[in-house]
Structures are given as C-alpha cells and as structure tokens.
Image (cartoon, rainbow, N blue to C red; front, side):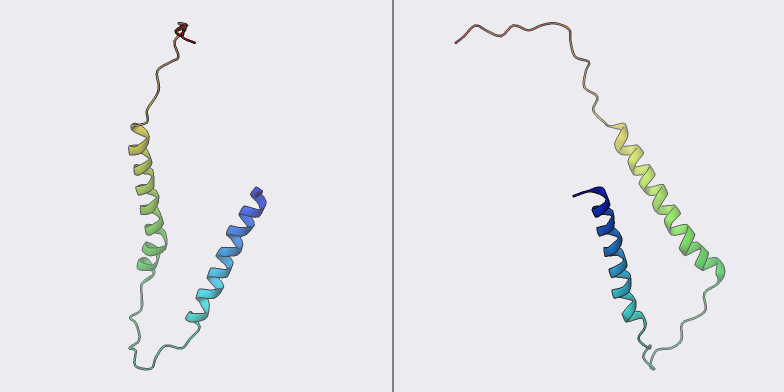
Length: 87
C-alpha cells in the first residue's frame, strides 16, 4: 500500500465520520430541554486553544520521560572471538 493510498484512506475516513456524525446534530432539540446558558468568548477560547495546548504539553512531557530511559548498547568490540572446533 503506497503512502498516497494510506493518506487518502485516512482523509476519506475522517470525512465520512464528520458527515455521519453531523446528521445527528441537524436534528431539532426536544422541546422539553431548557436552553443552554450562553458561553463567553473566553470560555470558548479556553476550550478550543487550551485543551490542545494541554494535550501537546502532556505528550511532550511523556516523550521526554520515555526517551530518557532508552537503552544505548555498548560499542562493538574489535576483538575477534574464535568459535570452538567442534564438528
């Protein structure tokens, strides 16, 4: 599978999921629901900017913690080991 077809599969899956999930959002709210309180611009910005920023920081911290404990093998030796002469 080529890189182009993988990218196309990911993009088409995302488009299908957005279209499929948006059909439920088009339905009218039940008349028994009370209207939601208005959100301030600051709370919307906090949600749309703050949440991805926090996720970015958490992923960066996790990668730093994981990369600190990577095993580095010793350098190869220049000695030649002879195998036993058993046939």
